[in-house]
Every structure is written in structure tokens, then in C-alpha cells.
Length: 375
Image (cartoon, rainbow, N blue to C red; front, side, top):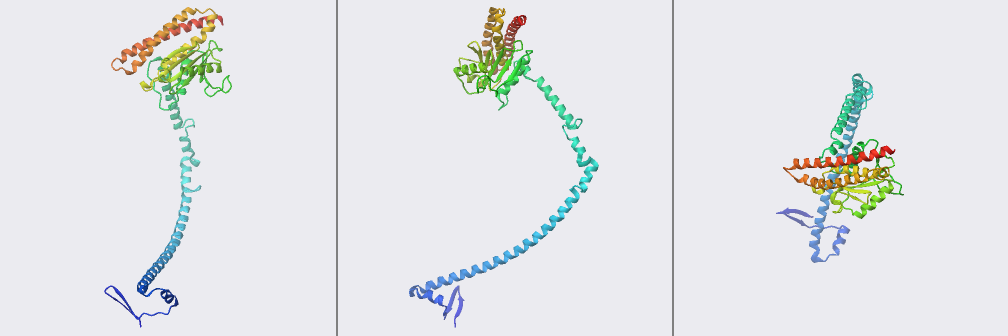
């Protein structure tokens, strides 16, 4: 008879025998000196396996109980969902109590509320507010518009990311409005006379002479050579069938040093810059104003000379303007960096600009007079 006892943490097995063929066959191949060790290992593996079987049985039981709980929970939630849907339909459905209240107090389908908050319905509060905002914006645009920026020497700094072409279009629109009959056309994406060429961003048609056109090319680049500028302007003038061209650079640093911020080349195109990186991108619209007036006069001179224009008078005035432009450029550079002397320098700048505009005005009147007499 087999006796099994546990004493002081030790398992004692006596008189153990078995006829199980698998057990006997397994131990028959083991050498006698290893039998005891192998027997203990086999016993240990059996105990671990029995424990695992016990855990698995517990897991199966837990899974069964969870499944029952899940079925019960699903049954409850389905019933709750149906109840909630019925209540929502009763309250918020097409024929529900909430829709009835809306129709009674705000018209069918809340039409009264819709009308009140419709910004396109004339007479509604939002329509009146929208109209007022538009009027205020229009008034502010006129009060603080480009024209004031040109007439007064003020600093206009474009917002970050604002396209230079758009800025120039705003400035040019105001300048063109000064000359009755002149017309501005943006041709940035329009192919001109030359096949596949879009050179020439803006075209100004002169009112007194519709056959006289000015072309302007605007560039916001890091640097560009004078040779490249000449190539661009020659193509732009031909492409837009213009008499004269103006190359407008955003940064003076982008141009060759010899060009400066205002210079004429080949008698048919002008190069100018509207701002400097040194002065944090402050735009000077008056430079563009003078450039357009200059180009306008140059464009009209050829025809006016043949019709009796006093060329020597015009040349004398242009030389005086060039001299004043040199002083004007120096003053504008200093004006940004000065402190206590800013008012004095600004006043001097105003006087120089007024002088330039006076000279340009006299030239323009003389040309218009001659042209008018021969039209």
C-alpha cells in the first residue's frame, strides 16, 4: 500500500508502484543513477499541468459569466435606446412638441428667426449691420487710402505675405485716377503680342493719346542684373505695344548698386525701387508716383515734339528733376534713421517732393497744350 505524507516541508512517498505502460516505458530507458532526478522532474511537470488545468477551468467559468452579463446588458441598452428614440421623436420630431412650439412662436420651420438672422434680407438686423460695416470700410478706405499715402510722405509697410503686385496695383490705381481718361490694366496673366510671353504686369493707356501706352514690370526678387532688367523691359515694351516701360523692384538691394533707387536707361525705360531691407521694408509710394509721371511725359514727348513742343524747355525741366531726385533719395534714406531731427528732414523731403511734382506738372501741361492744339 502506498503511503504519502508531508513532514517539515518534505513530501514522503513509500511503496509506490504502477503498471501504467507509458510511465514504465519512459523510465525503462533512463539509467539507474538518473532515475530519482528524472522522477522528481516528471512529478513537478505533472503538478504544474494540473494547476494550469485548474486555472483554465476558472477562466472558462469567468468567460461564461461575462457572456451572460453581456447579453443582459445588450438587452437593457436596446430597450433603453428604443425608449430614448421614442421620447426624442415625441419632443423633437417633425410633429413633436418642440417643432410645434417653434412654429407657434417663430413661424413655420422657424422662418421668423431665419429672417431675423439673414444678412441678405433687406431690413433684417444683420442686413443693416452688414450695410453699416461696408459703408465704414469704404469710408475708411477713402480716408486712409493710397491717394493720401502718395500726397503725404508717409511710411506704408505692407503686411507680411502681401503680394507686391497687389500692392503696386493699389498704388497705380490711385495714380491713374489723377489723370482724366487714363486707364490701368493688370496684364500679369495675359499673353501679349509676343507668343507665349506675359512680360509686363501693368499697362497704362494715356487718355490724351490712346495710342501711347506705358508698361510696368514689378519684381520681388533677391537680386537681378542690369542686363536681365534690360532684357525684361525690352520684351515687355514690345509685348504690350508700349512707348515706355518702368521696372519696379521691391527692394533697392535687389538692384545693382549703380542703379540706385531711380534711374533711366536707353531713353525708353526707367528702373526704380520702393523700399529697402535696411529700413525694414518701408514702402515709399511717392517714388512710384514720380516714376509714372516721368514715364508719362517721356511717352508723350516723341509725338509732342513733332507738333511744336519746346524740347529745350522740357529737357531743362527734366535735368532739374534729376538733380532734385538725387537729393530726394538721400533725404529719404536719412529720414528713416533719424530721431530728434525727423520733423526737419520730413519738411525738407516734402519741399523737394513738391518741387519735383511742380516741375512735372509744368511739363505735363506744356505737352497736353501742344497735343490738344493738334488733335
